[in-house]
Length: 335
Ligand SMILES: [Zn+2]
Ligand SMILES: [Zn+2]
Image (cartoon, rainbow, N blue to C red; front, side, top):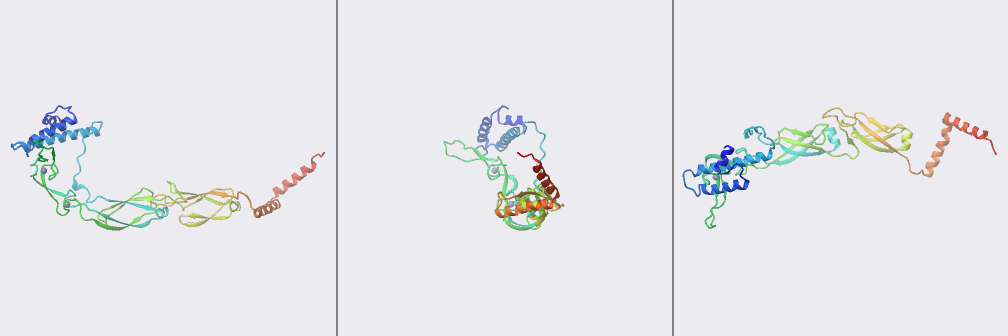
């Protein structure tokens, strides 16, 4: 039904307000409803009144939701084209180690399948006219209120369509069948990132699984986009001075790292996170913070004095400098 025709059907001007439209529909519905109007054209007239009202409402909703004139909307996809069951959405939390190496996780849950007898509608459409509303889609409850007609209501028997239906027996009108439990082993490939979606085809489940992976923050490592893992570690300052090795945590367990005096950043290639799914691994980047005692103990002081004294003996430049310094002192004029 066209826009102008719809307004004409309700006897309204085209700029009628929402309240005027509803009022006109109520007035006409209570006059033409087949429950109170036995004339031959009552059913047809009531259907036109409902169509006109819906057409105006639809046009107003479209106008509200689109500021600019929208192109013709595509026709809605037929229900049969949809997959039998929409995928089951699940979330899965992994540690960084699990995400890096890949793992197998068991997912258990329950699933309420859509009734395939009625495509989830809960009813079967019979095609004939609804008996309760006589095809009008609306129904007026009798009231004892001074004989005033009650408000027309949507007919529940036919969902306000005016076409008869019967409840679907296999699902008892609910549109869903008995709940099923499932358990499935999901193989997570190495290198999944936080927020990744994994599609698991249905083999042991009533529908495909859509698994959203969450990767927990790691207490030591920060994952970079390129797969490098960054970490910051305190190391013994004397070990750093002495070029000793210190144990360093990696995704593959603790490994020795040979410190180099003066250097604070180290790269361990191949010990990072996969650069992409199943791809080669990035590097682990270790940033060290050499830690020295705030205050030396007596024992440390004695040892340091010995170290200082020994330094001149092994380093010719220092021995030379100390001789120069003593010679200058001797030449200084006194008095
Ligand atoms: Zn059903
Ligand atoms: Zn009905």
